[in-house]
Image (cartoon, rainbow over all chains, first blue to last red; front, side):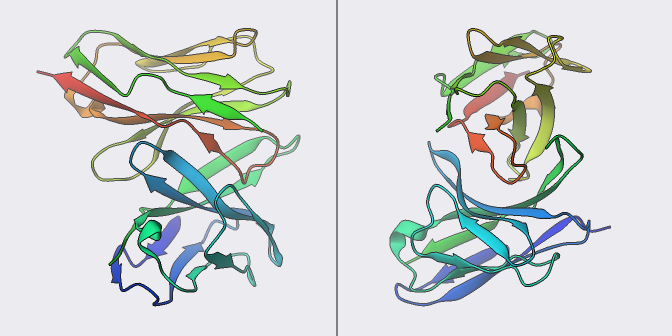
Length: 116
Length: 114
């Protein structure tokens, strides 16, 4: 049982390049989210999904796209990378056990992205 | 919108002593969840403890306990018998209803001295 798997772990991009951060979970969780972590800012929500085919914006969505074609995968796309997107990115998944109780909120190990 | 405030950027404690990390939050909701996460240098996010707002009893997990004051919107973490392995960044987080969305504080760096 791998949990939440993020790839790659490290990436360097040039300004203007595009790339996709991969996130996969094998726990059949219906909920998945992407966060970015910057020094002194905590983690901030970029996009989230409550099920396959359903996504929505979080606090800092600009410059990022997501899609959720399957329960397992939730990729994050940077269309035209900018230095301001230099950050550590975390994917997370969870499920609900009645009454909206959040359970099993599991984070991936993160991707450190540098845009030069 | 909910906000989470961790006003102390850094703390230091002697090994075996007790330390309390502060967190306040702002919400107009009545039913929600609060969490403390630990992030060691490995970068992994580790759940330390969770508290359901509808429960009056403070949550405890071994050496970790919380002081949940709902009216004051305060959620502090107490670490007893501090160990060197407790050295990490600690984040307070809030969740309302949707399990997809956590709101985090800015974090506090805790150093445990030998």
